[in-house]
Length: 377
Image 1 (tube, rainbow, N blue to C red):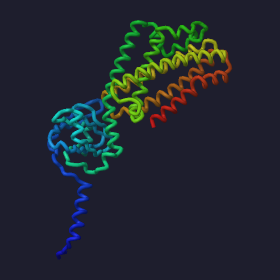
Image 2 (image 1 turned 180 degrees about the horizontal axis):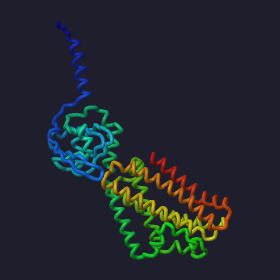
Image 3 (image 1 turned 120 degrees about the vertical axis):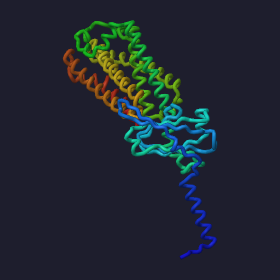
Image 4 (image 1 turned 135 degrees about the horizontal axis):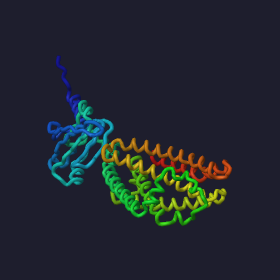
């Protein structure tokens, strides 16, 4: 049975067919799925599969490279980390952008993922004449991909260089002040009676050796704050500084200087409050006790983070979240331990001591934690 269509029906069907094909599909110019080179490697996190393909970008200069990426994969272009994908993703990049970024005629594209993930799905790369979905260029996923690409490599460079600088300064401090470093890094030194003695003076904190140590701790704390800001809220960082290595280093040093200044101001405030609450010289034990906690907390945070930065960057955000949460509770437990210690060592009423610690530590720390939480969200 044959059905005859009039000219008007043919015209309508033609328009519909053209419109649907234009919105849902795009002309494939080159397909690279048959040119993948695969190899398997092993690491501490288990076996992983690496797929590599070379893409010529000198042909079809107005076209687009269309990527289909399986979940839990990492994309490298010319050895540079371009994106981390926790879910199956589709996106495209203009060929002109890639030529401007790398200034080469051929690009090496590499996907790294778990070996078991490659058994179920494989990446796909094609060169297309136009974007398959015009609105994808404005989607949140593509913008997030660009932000990851712009921030991931500077984070790694900044993290490694700052870690090397901190370790170098610690080595210099160990040579210059070996005894003092041993005293400052003894976790149980604060429980000794001389920590609450009347000896000592303001020059003990404002001496060069103590200020040098405070500067190292300030560098560690500033590094942790900047790294956390880049991981959890890159938009906030990009709105204030350019996400380049030199800008991050400048912000790191500026942040360390501000933290050092605030640390000195905090000690002065502790001294004034200790005088008002008639605690004698307790501000020294208070200050150095929490300084040890912050030093050890930052050291653990930097050490664990550096392992994941160098080995498994995709897990850094979740690990960093756990580390910050652990730092919060350790600090709160440290304040509780300081309260019990001062209660046993000092002849002062408990409610006066509790009020002193609330004003000096608990309330400011909770306000700072709330601010960091809002920034991360």
